[in-house]
Length: 166
Image 1: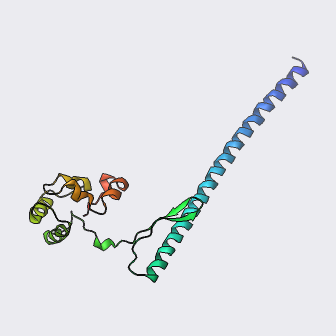
Image 2: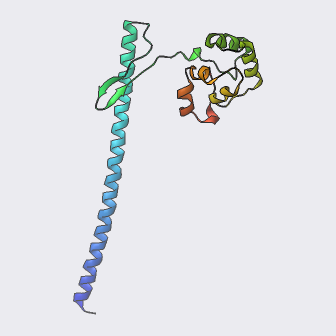
């Protein structure tokens, strides 16, 4: 084999090695870019959350009856909406006693007797999901749809972590 052939093969293999190193470098830079973009978006989300909370607190300080914010444009395609809720006002139907259930059901109202609904709730415990309440006699889809946590609850929590509440 001549030296010219050896030099040609050496140069070709060197080009392959440099191309591989360049490809790995481009992949690392791309990963770094995606990571940086994610950190920027998380920081902006944190700032938006803080801004939304401060807007709600300022409006609450001005007028204590305010419990929610309408959608507010914070700029750069970021929107804010907030709602003040008292977690103590929720009722866990798996842990509530009969009197608490009667009080809560008398507010919601139904065509059937409130005591019959409370008794069927107690008899069918535990509930893993709010949707299971629709199977009870006396609780129709309209009544269930008026419960404040129905829409958010079913999308956010899997059945294993669900705590049905009215």
